[in-house]
Length: 227
Image 1 (spheres, rainbow, N blue to C red):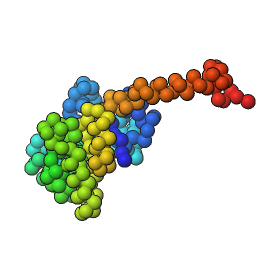
Image 2 (spheres, one colour):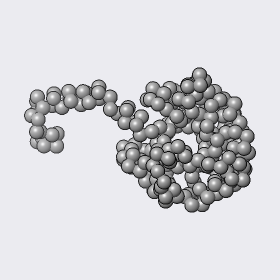
Image 3 (cartoon, rainbow, N blue to C red):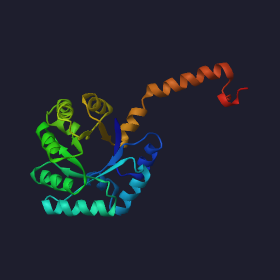
Image 4 (cartoon, rainbow, N blue to C red):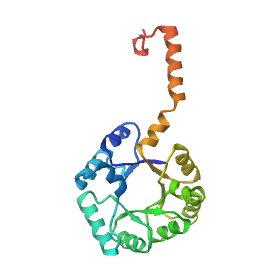
């Protein structure tokens, strides 16, 4: 099970890298827009430094033509890191590019997936990760749990190396549902992780424990001060 951050905000990445073993960081042009006009390649290299070699960095191409996708993928791999996962949307041009890039040794995340058939085609093209858009699918009255479960079944049945990287979440419940349906990884904004850890019940439990301890040993007596 891999937890990834869907952000390029360095402070959030550093904060969560100190808490958990991040599976990676994902990005797309819309996420980059939130940070403004950054020094793109330097910024991405800094993210890679923060998360370390064991975690994956996923960077999306912006070109919509075959040759453009190949050029951008080459620039990303050359100027950031060869191990970067190139995010390519699953359409006719994208599939052609995925197939070619795999022959060149590139890591690929097939993105903008809304249907089972898109995922099957991405598997056939050799994609390493499949990124179904959970919340966007729900908004279109497409059942993402079923799609993810179908991906998981096909990966198992045909022993495909692809992993399911569920994306596009609005709440913790959707993330839980994606993992339960068979996703091996999920990428989410820091706000969702913050939401999960900010439950009032967690704070109440901690306060109750501290009150019980203070009732026995006093408020200013931590465990390490005991004899």
